[in-house]
Length: 326
Image (cartoon, rainbow, N blue to C red; front, top):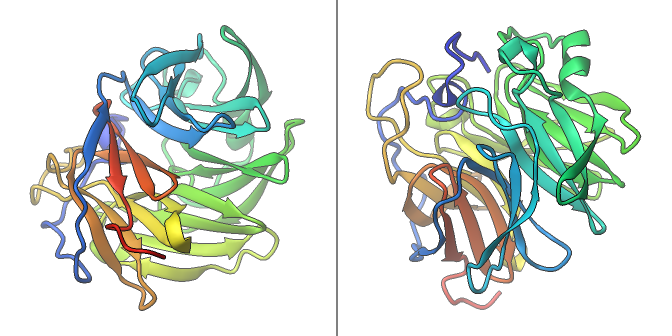
């Protein structure tokens, strides 16, 4: 991604310079219901081994536990490096067994911070161990695309064979990380801005936001193998895709963060309430499941319900099958 020198949040995820998107396929809308509000710097999420939803809170350097039935929120861990700029800090979370790991980004010296950008193991409510310094590795192994931040912008984390797969939306690549801290590159892209991902067996399904101005045709879901990274398109047609997950009935779902207010300066936010939950169709298009979401960032499923985290600190529950049987 070509991040602006101002390093604003919108320069990586919310900047849109195109007219509002026309849906690529017929819509089948579900009505979202608000589960939680008031999270400070919400971004990534996962379903924990106890079935609860875990969400990163970047402004406080915390991971929150959310009861996905009642909406009750408690602090699972706190004391991680907080945000230094408009984006970053604790940005995603994943579990291996009962142990949580948190992806922390944009907290190192090249953006004015003093902490490690990498993967932190949660050893206790206030105790963490850095298992992989992704910022230093990225600085030592620069990408082939242009960049402003040597340490990169690691965006999403998922588990693969007792280790991890990590996307870097600024360096336009996907990394593999072992729990012992070994880091290697899975694939280097051109300027496509990889964001959220879902890993199944040895296949990575990946959301692409596309470069500024985030044209709808460049908002894609693709997949490729960990060992044979030959990329194949799955679906496209919506701007600024930020996450992808397999959901009920084997369906593949994606989040579009939203539309643009028009020709505006780089760094401008998406239109309020213009994000959408999408389902990929077999013809390479999407159908809209839910709309009018305000800056969604992350997506999880429990049963037939989607749980959508938004940048304004909310979590929304959305029936993802419209009551239909699989």
